[in-house]
Length: 119
Image 1 (cartoon, rainbow, N blue to C red):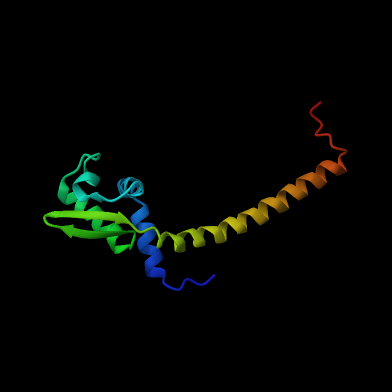
Image 2: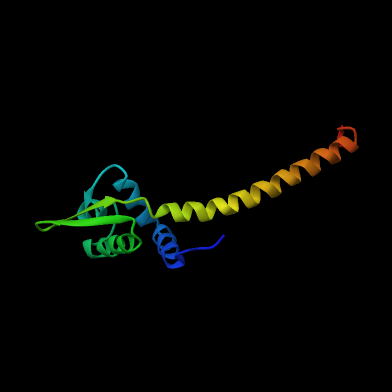
């Protein structure tokens, strides 16, 4: 698997690595919100919330629009697709190996006549 834009993938995973930013994304999944609305559930200043919003924005996960004095954010989940595909690559890897292990264990059980010797 070749990563076309590894810096974008790095930015998405960096943004998702923080629980506050993940909570902000979950909130934006319900609809647009101001930076103040995103900050409200967290014990942080508006400046700290703005830093989190900036990380999400740089990763392309949100879009920010200024309406008067209010910064309104909305979710853009499209960049998560690259992360999902990266993870799916490894899901296939482990699924194949676990299937192989299951087959080996089943064959071993069949050789022993289906008894594990514990009865």
